[in-house]
Image 1 (cartoon, rainbow, N blue to C red):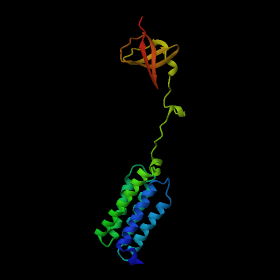
Image 2 (image 1 turned 135 degrees about the horizontal axis):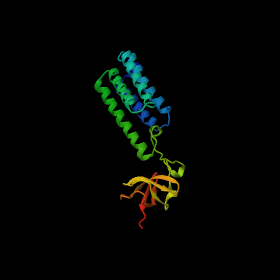
Image 3 (image 1 turned 30 degrees about the vertical axis):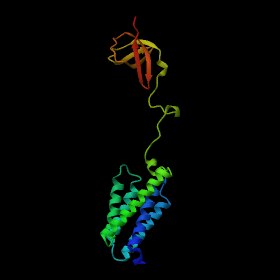
Image 4 (image 1 turned 60 degrees about the vertical axis):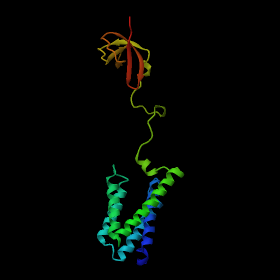
Length: 212
């Protein structure tokens, strides 16, 4: 069993399974079967190398640390934990391998298969990265859906009032008994000048002077 699990071809197959399972996990909303399969493949890799005397407890500890950091990446902001976790995982693979060259080749083959699978899922099957999408808000807050970031005073359009302060171009105007922060189109409007609301964009109320 030990000789079988440490065979270069078997090692490559196990790493390919682990890599492709990690890619599939990116498209799952939560940790599921692909993640368990990938973890099982890695455990078989380390079990075989540990039983063969190629991997020690330090290597296993680094592997476990890598898995923990990758898991924490799902809950922590940024990509620091995930990056450190992948680095620890790859480092433990090289430490456990009998030949650095052979492990490097196996990892390159695993990466190649994983990249091909990733491209197929995106381009051919039009899959979306559910895990990534769950961390990032893509939905826009639209007024039509009931979201209002600021009071929209469209009711002021067309109303006439008096500039309470000098508008250069921002200032305050009085409409009836209501005091409103306004802005001109860019021109200077003196205090007590008659103004009319010509445009409202969210909290921005644009006025123009009423010429006598």
